[in-house]
Length: 224
Image (cartoon, rainbow, N blue to C red):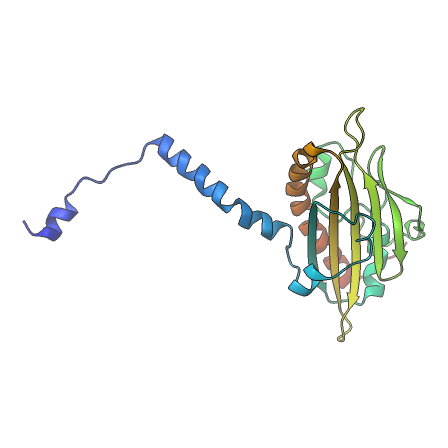
C-alpha cells in the first residue's frame, strides 16, 4: 500500500463534546478584544475617534469611551429634529424597541417630527426609562446634543459618571456625519461589572439607532 493510501486509511480522531466546547470558549475569549474594539468604534473614522467632541470635558477622565458614527444623506438641519426629541415617552430611540420593551421600558419610536418635543434646552431632562433621566448639558442647534447623568445601584452612590453626545458634522456635499459618543468615568472599583454589560447592549441599540435616524432623516419627514 502506498504512503498516500496508508494516510487515507489512517483513523481520524473525533473530538469529544467537551473538547469542542472548550475550543469554542477559547476561540470566543481570544476574539473578545477584537469584538470589543469593533463594538465601541463601529462606523467611526480614525479622525472621528481622535476628535475632541462637545461634552468630553464633562467627564474628563473616562475609563471607557465608545464612539460610533454613520453617514446620512441629509443636512444637519434635517437630522437635528429627530435627535432633539429622543427619549422614553418622547420620540423614543429609533432602535429595536422590542428589545427595550422586553425589559419593561415602554419605548415607542416616532416616525414623525413632533413639535411638542422640539423645545429641549440646557437643563431639560431626557428620560431613558421611568424614573431614570439624563440632563441636557449642551444643546447647540443643529450641531451638538450632550446628555449627562449618573446611574445609581440600589441605595449606593452611582458607580459611574456618564455622558452621551450626539454631534452632527456637515459635509461639503450637503450631507452629514452623525457621531455618537459615550463616556464612562468610574466612581467605584466595581463599576466595570456594570458598564461592560451595558456596553454590550449599547452596541446593538446604538447601531440600530444610527440606522433608524438615517432612514428617517433621508426619507419623507412628516411633522405634527
